[in-house]
Image (cartoon, rainbow, N blue to C red):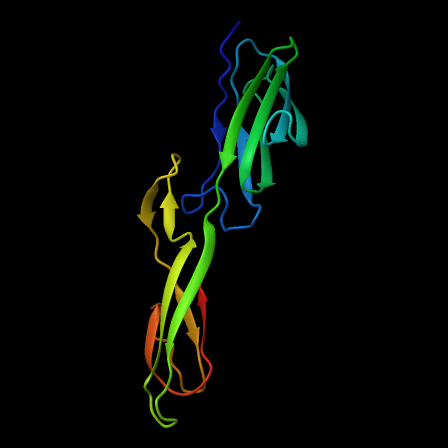
Length: 178
């Protein structure tokens, strides 16, 4: 019997393993250093070791440095990495990849009072996305600023990255929030 404790790496983007809600750009990799050196079959399952098999690899650990493995294009969710040594020892390591909440944008529009006035305004409230960074324990750790890119009718000047614009004339306005 020997200790087998692989180190796992899941890069984070803004505190999450997935860059944006609904994308599948997560990664899970490891470079285990067990003793004695053996060859391992590695299986990646979704949800549990009884879940859907995603991929199988062979990891040769009789070389120095030992080889490593990496899975990418993973969606948010639970995974199990199962190592089976050539001597029959099986170890399972659950891992969870997190994604940010979906981005929600709500606005309050104040209409122009008279067609020749500049009295309109738009005030946005933004929640979700990666405006909040999350640590490995699921706690909020820092608040990242949203950016706003406004467009409007001819003569409109984007005031920069602000959530409220005013002194608006009649016309269509849009915003991209990231």
